[in-house]
Image (cartoon, rainbow, N blue to C red; front, side, top):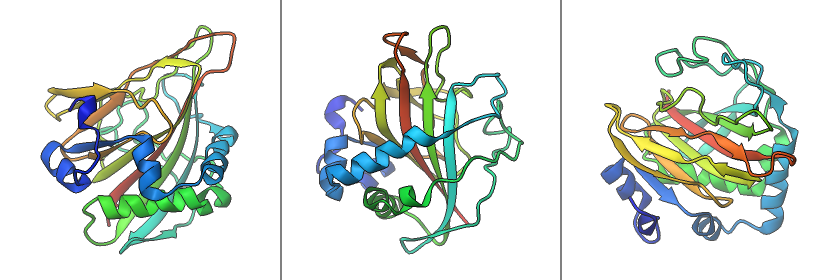
Amino acid sequence: MSDADILTNISLRHELEDYGYARLSGSDLFDRLAIRAADWAALAQSWDDLGPDLYMADGGRYRRRRHATFACDHGRFTPKPHQPHFQSRDYNPLNGDVQRWFDPVEQATIDNTAMQSIFAFCAHSFPLKGPQHVELHQFRIEARSGELGRPTPEGMHRDGVDWVFVMLVERRNVREGVTRIGAPGGRELGEFTLARPGDAVLIDDHRIMHGVTEIHALDPAQPAWRDALVLTFAAE
């Protein structure tokens, strides 16, 4: 799909059925969800308080994150007790088969009106069937002088779930960070950049592999990062 295919009036579910993924611009998302500027600013600011990811098997210290889990049933999200994030090596050859404990997402972030609207949007947009296990990830990928930032160090991958929502929160002083989409057999299906706050992609994890290229600091003397929100849904 080209930039002209970014969703306007086409049903997200139809787009997911036809392509296995669907794109949404930040301006469209904000309009659909009636997100207020103050709520978005408060939500985005929470990315300034993420702990380091100490599980990176490549030795990198470029990723910060928080993590939370929920049960979702009929569009209602109920927090689960804090628990580790786990992926098998079948899906994450770099960091798989490890129980990874991250700082929990703060309650104020979960309760933020913009976040609650995003939860509802995902529950409505994905064809969810029955109770769901939902994981929320706040990611900050940093780029420094002499060190690249790798949003997906495992490369093109599937997450081992049913549905994935990825939304850009902020890009600060970075270039690259191109999202690539492919079929499980390796065929490339497209690439694009989540460039503006709220730009998002919805993914059928059974049909689509995804990855993001490395980010580089435009000015190595200044802080540089890419902030993203990821929500995954898996039938329980």
